[in-house]
Each structure stands twice: as structure tokens, then as C-alpha cells.
Image (cartoon, rainbow, N blue to C red; front, side):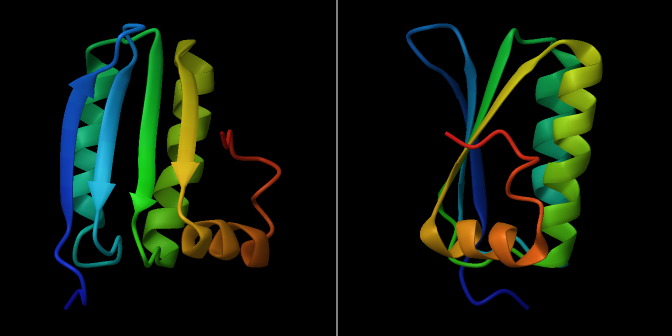
Length: 105
């Protein structure tokens, strides 16, 4: 069970990008909710997608895999992807060795 209640909301910023703002832990118990939000957003074919993870204190391996898959999918579909992360999430990305691959802001 997650230590921090997970939430995800979708908005559009002033520049027209779709923004998914996440809060709480992204782990095995919550990753499907984030995946559904990402799938729905990509299905709408936005030009830009920003995933805000600054409110995420914990990112498990399932969440990391989802972000890698999302990076690949957005590249394949011509969607600009930007990830904005908390220091804790950045550390997971560094330790796992994928930080240079992911489109961080």
C-alpha cells in the first residue's frame, strides 16, 4: 500500500500543452492510474505533454518503466514530452541509469 495518497489531474497550460500533475507515491499499487491518464492523454494526440512529478516523493520501478515506455511512445507519435520531477524522483532516475534518456525539464 502507498504511503502517500496518489492523485493525477489533467489540465492545459497557456501554451496549449497538456499537463498531468501527479502527487503521492507512484508504485505498484498506483501505476495503473497514471498509465490510464497517460494513455488517455496520448490518445488525444496533444502536440506537447508535460508530466509534473514534483509532488511525487516515491517512484517505484513500475513507475520508472512507465516513464521510459511513455518516452518511447511519445517519440514514435511525434508528441513533445517533458518531465518535471522531484529530487527524490530524480535520484531514482540517476541510480537506475536512465536519467540521460528521459526528457527532463
